Image (tube, rainbow, N blue to C red; front, top):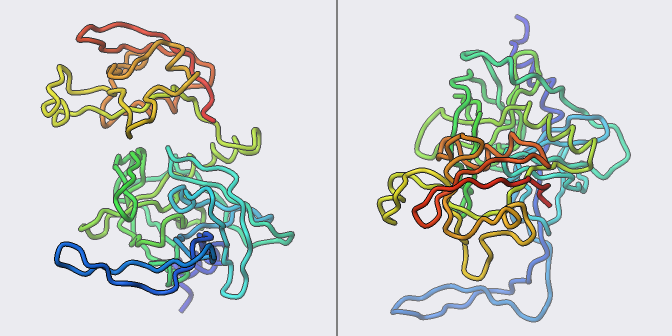
Length: 342
């Protein structure tokens, strides 16, 4: 009896799937003490002196896409900008890696292994050709422990929209255009490839729905291809940038804050002391102000399903856009010329 298609694909793809280990120099903990407070005992770490040690703070999966060690993974796996990144190709084969680009809008990142050798790699497919119901395989390092975990399933949905939270629930990213699959995706699988039956990558595993079974999501690989082209041309991923901090308005937020509209982007600072309008940005030059509500961009309504960030992503750096805003209960139109996000 011959090998199954899943086995053949796994043999072809698994050598290119790697583990990303995130570490950081942190104060050395030399024990714990009990601190009484409110009638209870709380355990706190004892940190003595200025001694630091390199400690693992996270990790995920990724996959090599070129023989010189170019890697694709999820942005949330490598979001720590002052951390060290180690790539584990095999249990005894480890390399340092440099983050070339992060794309939080599409939750993808590009890394480069810092070693002069040839690596096993996997070919990229075309996510525009995906069909509902086609077979797919998710590969990654489940729970950060079980390397080369392979799970099979089908494409359950296309063009999905979700709000993805990190493991502690403090950060959220609105992701759209996602591939939905019932192939098992677990914590630690993030950044691994979603592969079709031709053994080509069609997506980057990114999120699961907590409390649900057999519902996972992947970023279409064509989004990553655009980022790769940007890095090759400009050395970075460039995004058009307006320069405002905002929250998206829905019916619940509108009712709670007695707003006259239930859609749009309300310009407001996220934390005390920060500026809601970035200095010298397109927004500042256009005259936008805190508490303005941006209702439309080029006559397209701004909603939770079609947020401002996604509308701007489709524009070009240097492009002039037309914004309809609500200021002091009066609607007005403003033009802004988008800049590159630094």
